[in-house]
Length: 490
Image 1 (cartoon, rainbow, N blue to C red):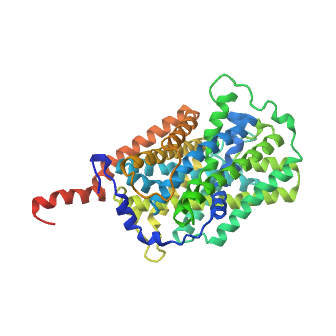
Image 2 (image 1 turned 60 degrees about the vertical axis):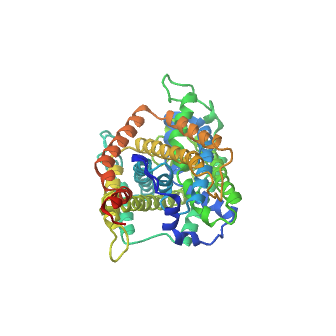
Image 3 (image 1 turned 120 degrees about the vertical axis):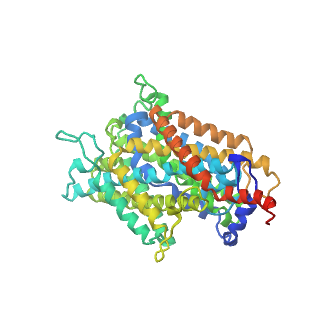
């Protein structure tokens, strides 16, 4: 066990030993399977929710270039995830990787940071879900009052402002109840969801292309309006930081490393292949959407639905909205599930209260943790606008990605002789490029988003030093090891 103050870390050998059962998984996945898995994991909330917001407020038609920039950043980070997943093939995601490399303090930071990705991500998707369900119900003659379908202070047609977002609360509550009872996705259900998402996206591109008005693309990059991020090239950069949300989920691909037949070959093909496919689809969707609707009219929570309305095919509009709702529902489920499991792992390490590791005797789920997370996410989804949520999720995820890239460089120096089934090429250049691209995208985000991140991380530091550090299982073990010689106990 390696330790030095805040840098105490679990040894890789200890982690692998604790996950010995997972090491026996069948190596049955080829490059095509991993690529398909990546496409399914990546295509989700961002493309249905934030594309319109980013185009309307920041990049205009240049949102297409924003997606390209986001995809390049993910490619460098994805290679780093591949090495870490192949080296440490156990549960816990980037929190576990960081615990084994940079130590407990950085593991805490990344675990705290992942709340922004998972919990706030679920809230963001719930707001997008609300926009689509409101649009769908309106099509069939059931109108949800606008004051109960938007964040407080949002101006509504006819005057006045909204009170809270009721549909977002309802979907979070329902999914939380399902997760508490142990509902989980089967492989077949996952495959169906992938098929639905791809069908919806490809159909939108195919049918929408014939209705595109190319005049809406001119100029491709609207002139800057006097401040950073308000169109122009800085707007493309800021747009990339916002729509980076659309790529969240690609890191799940790296967990397949232990089941890849040839990880050295299959992992980079799977990760880069899925990123290339999704980036192309995203760029095409952005092109069609901004070609159908003037970009300044896309500042809505359901931009794809607005684009479909322009096409004017009734049955197709219904299909797209149903498909979007299905895909978004799955994403909310996965994010809420993932947040509770990360909290579960952190609680087992003593960094969070045991409440988060308490399992229901019948359902075998961390029900108290799941209920608390669901309640917090529901409140946030009800009260916070989607643009603020999206920016918070993006900056939190980018910060976590930087730590993963740094972990690769650090472990290459400290444990250079360890067997690595997959090795990032060009270390330290590739991880450094990943860090720089993430920093570039973070730099494009608004100052108030940075301030929220700083405040959030400051709260995390307080929690760590006043609770996590004192209750750390690792630190207690190290303390016992030091005290044993003094007491004469082994």
